[in-house]
Image 1 (cartoon, one colour):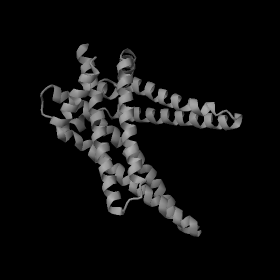
Image 2 (cartoon, one colour):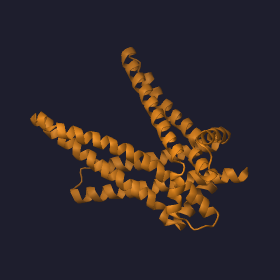
Image 3 (cartoon, helix red, strand yellow):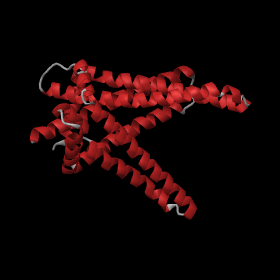
Image 4 (spheres, helix red, strand yellow):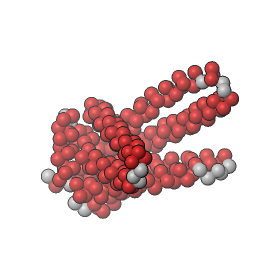
Length: 262
């Protein structure tokens, strides 16, 4: 498998079909709204807590619950947008017109797989966080800083292994119309078979995600004037949309190359 060819050809697709940015631009806009909403709510709770206005916190607690429900909705909305790209890549490679409507319909047709994958990702992250908290507590209890140093490699390795195993779930479900169990079983099988290439791809994805995250943190912590801060906020979100669109294209493109070899 020529990984450089996959990465290069995915970039060509993104450049030739600019409409593929739309799903991620939409989800990025919703995430931006969530970020602003959450920041505003945090500031209001902090301000009321400082003056001791406890009775005024009740409506904000209800808003916090609404915010929690919204992020769950947004999480699955993001997975649906991600699931649109296998159809987009498949149509592009078949020289068919790329239709976002058709891609959305294909994504919604595998909603059981999307819900299952979303739940599995959530449980995996919850487990990793629980282990991380346990290790930190043990490190403090036993006064063993070495455990903290071992934590980061454990978390990164766990994420990489998990990503390799579920890497092909959505493309298999969308392109081959496989059932829920069959999609996971085949993804695990292909993941193990191409684990070397997939580790490289996921490391590349992780590096891109960390860079965009770092840019976002820097843009929000420089103490710039309001207009420049707003421009930086919007600019970073656009960069994230571009990066995540490219990552979403590489995933099914890689699968289509693997499928062709079989």
